[in-house]
Image (cartoon, rainbow, N blue to C red):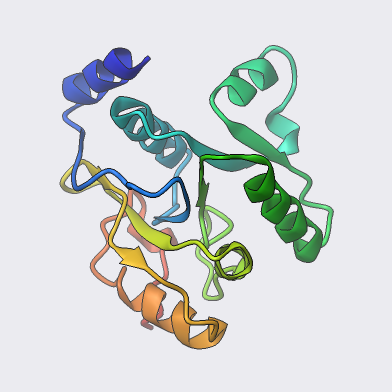
Length: 183
């Protein structure tokens, strides 16, 4: 799969930029998230560098035969009807069960423009004491990167404000659907 993913990215003009995370566990903030293609290019990048990255997707996509493929690609089904705190607890448990996990979460929580990003990725990183990689999809340059590393401080509001500010120059597929904290 690694070579197939590299080939697909090469054919389409996409590339992975930056270092590969060295730690065994982390949370990856995947920003911006304005298109269904974000999953595809992110997954191709992760496969191409051999990074065992888990992602979340609403459970409605887990029907046969798509569900089998999604689970093979390390996709965790999410019940959007549950409280956010239940999902956070489930994901904290995932970190305890695995020796190696990089959990990729889209803080925006939707492909639609959201002025308030979800904070669960920071809560999880704090709870299991792992860093957050500030991942980025850049449609202008056709680049995917996992980094730089951000170590959460425990001040969720300040951390979120800082993280959002690092994406002000982002190049999403649909810019009108992206909000980085600036009006």
